[in-house]
Length: 578
Image: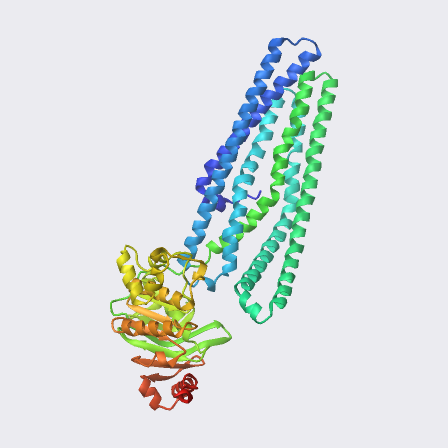
């Protein structure tokens, strides 16, 4: 009943804590039986006026000892629950993270980021409760009635048998609800994911929504998703309340039946007063563990629904282990390269590209022509391409992602800087580097002076380095990239949306780097690609022209039109000022 062997197998280290909690609960139950037995026999002695000071003192000592034992058991059981929950969170989140690392940068082709976040946070939290609360209670709910049955069978077999027979009605009631509840909770988690996806998208695009005053439209869309989630949540709560009501009726009915049997057996002279009272007091204990298990029913169902999503993520197909390394000759050759995000709309149409080792090659064209798609293919983000992409004569699909990342450094206009210090962000590019080397790199990208007026390498960066300007962010991103020191560098619109001074400094550094590295520069601004050995001009997913800057101007084609248009815009007003 809601026991997933695979799930329990994954959290192997949590088993000992689950077992420990069950044993502690059982010890508490045994102690309670001892106390109840002592109290009932004392009451019988008091009724018949046969009690003395010794029997009262003995019962008092037993009661105090039992309370201490139960306190210790309860405290230690809570600790076991905590340790179990901690192991679950640690192991599952590590497995999810390792899975994403194995899938690599192309994970978005198989699963939404919002779903990964939901599974890793809320989904794991549900399983924390499953292991910390439901699972120990499940085994204890099996053990407790059997223990009570064995004990009461020595007192009155009829009462023991009847009470034991009534206990399974609670799990039967749970099982009756389970099929419907499983489908309902599957819909609940699906709607939860949809709401999370909508919320994440609106949050990321909040600035854009405010600029275009489209926030009211998105607010209505969000309200619709929220209303759907509210309705499915209310259905889940209704299901939980109904199941609790059914379990209460069975539990209280069973306890009442135990009282009736105890009274009839006492009347028939089959049990003593103390034994009758003991059956009445312990009758509830037959049902309380199973009733508590029922109260954890929604936790278990949520845990099962969450585990389905976690396993769906963990079972995503992985590309077979690649061992090929990029040779020293890291030239790149693309033949008949095609790619589609949507099978009905092809982005790249059988293009041919060559990037010789040590060359400075640029790709230009209007937005949406496929430039950045090519860079994403080279970085392994877009894997579902057709045709051939070879690096050093080895097909890209045969090169391990680790080796790919070691040999290629990618810098875009949105290079991510993490919350933390400048030093921490730079050390991602290269470990075991001295502060002097870090300062040399910062001098190289012309941001050292700014940082020296702050806290130097210990300058704090906020999330996405929001406390720096766009140009300063790009300078830091370039410094980190230079520390990485890879044979190939891809600059994908790395100077977009930054100040002119920063753009000029970054372009100068790219030109310097081009003398010793293989450079692929993707840029919308043609003035930045003039010094390139080869320029590929793209239009609607096709390579329409290629050659050096001067060669392309002489062709009087697409490149020349773009060049003249940009030059006229950049020089507009300058002649009048002169």
